[in-house]
Amino acid sequence: MNEERINEFLNSRKCVWLCGAIFVIGSLLAMHTGRFTTTDTGNGVFFSIGNNLIGNPLISYIVNLACTFAIVALSMSLNKKYGVVRSYTFISASMFLLLQTANPFLSTHFNSGTALCLIAVVLCFILYASYQLKNTAQRRIFLIFAVLSFCCMFQYVFLVLVVAFTIGFMQMRAMSTRGWLALILGIITPFWIAIGLGFVNPCAATPPQIEAIWDYLQNWQVQLVIGSTVIVALVAIVLMVFDMFTILNYRLQIRLYNSFLLVLTIASIAMMCVDYRNLLIYVPLLNWCLAIWIAHAFTIHNEHTRRYIFIAVAVVALLGTFVAHMLAT
Image (tube, rainbow, N blue to C red; front, side, top):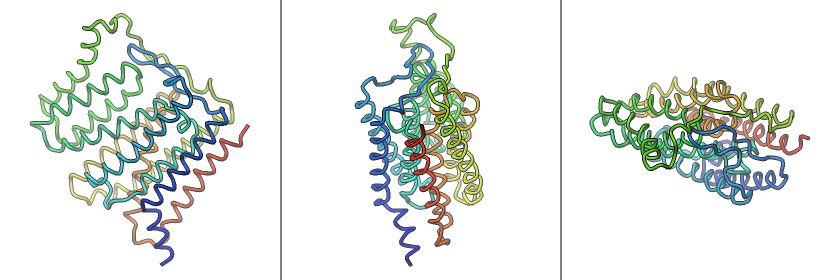
């Protein structure tokens, strides 16, 4: 009975509030050390946002805090509306907050990684609403790729979502000849408007010019970032594989929703390997995907009363990672 109460707490709204408090306290402590500066690098097709999205540290922190909690709220709404996870659960929200807390580089300032994750979650609503709407999904397809194309003007890393959502619309059975035309027009339109109105000069387009994030980090920071990210990626892959064995037995619509999350997970890990100099930007997106796979595992194996042990180990590991960041010199 006591074990079931622990499981119920971990899967409750109260746990989300507790993890939210941990995130706020941890990020404030990390911000006040002044050691976890932004590590955004890279540029977009026409603009370079550099490594300083918002100059004022306090405003940057507040914006990042608001965006992180927006991701949490939207994630719970996404699951409630589309039933991505078998039962309505709060554990994905709790785990995402803890995963973000573990890396102070992601929690102390607004960064491209937070923006990438937030936009991905928002666009998931549009993608999932397009399920089997092959004849009427063109507006949704155009909208998503216009948004991503606009973002690519400022940061090339949004190309990972262009690839993922192209596959996603194919998975949702929403692509047709008109759908492909909408996709192409969506990509072209922001550039067409920007160039046509004279906001940018097409001759000023630049290829990716990425300065390695490692140039901003000390040796101990590099080791912690790489080590923790590799572990997160491995756990995500293992849980994803095991979860999919059960998810394959769900009805088709839910299978396809989760198949897109599989694509998003693989795409984020693949881009980390290819675009390793921008590794930290992809971490929030991977954290979000991992949090959902953890929620799947927790709800799928609800017959095991001691499934809380896995969550407890994860919590200890994540908080330990945060403490290591704070104490390392």
